[in-house]
Length: 307
Image (cartoon, rainbow, N blue to C red; front, top):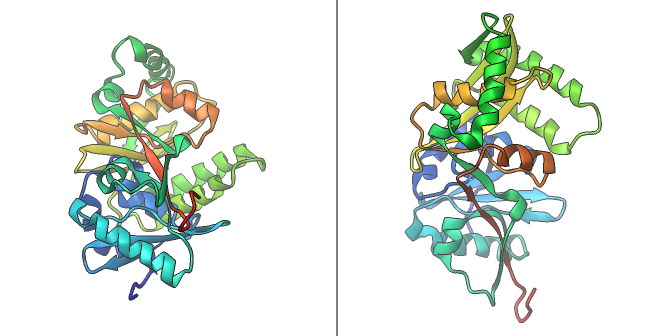
């Protein structure tokens, strides 16, 4: 089978980008930047199949796995079959797909006697109304608005929101070094890969279709965010949001100001998953999500078994 899997680079965006808008997908994986950030952590490679689809090849300690093909809905069954054949014949293993989006799972209607299909509960993305997060209006977001107002009063005349560009990378790197130092040694492995992914974004930001913004206090960067846009869903995807946790209301400020300035009209906001971390879950639920983008494990069963 002639599939050439390649590593993701900034130069690949021109080839890959058109495939991200071929069908509906509300997950954070519906935009290029998500794959770019985590390319090292998951050892991500991609192949373009017959100019119809992007097929994925990834790897963890359990072996190779994949993600749902990027293609038109009508091409999804054939692209899925090609991917399965590659896993079976070239890799000598059953096909496993992680984080399969709900639209694709529903469209494929995979037979349960051949595939295990189950929701990955901790991987669901939190979806919010864009206008709600930009205005923080209403009773359910009253506490968020109060914390934002505390920040605005306390740092009046001392803070500035700025749209960030490539020339600001040194400020972001300094912030990240300090932020990572505060985390100490006992942190999740993915955080170091995330930091490396951010460094890669900053080295290539002129080539990437992204939006960045930060809050400076006394001319020092104290919070920043990185996002991208899914035009099919009219949805902003917030990939990165970091702030100095010692500054009261700063997280609420960067959340609100980034959306108001960089995504002023986006109907929806995807703030990604909670990784199964209780603190993150509480924080994301406190912003009153409108919905969730659910994701699924799809695993080919061994013939003649239920496993």
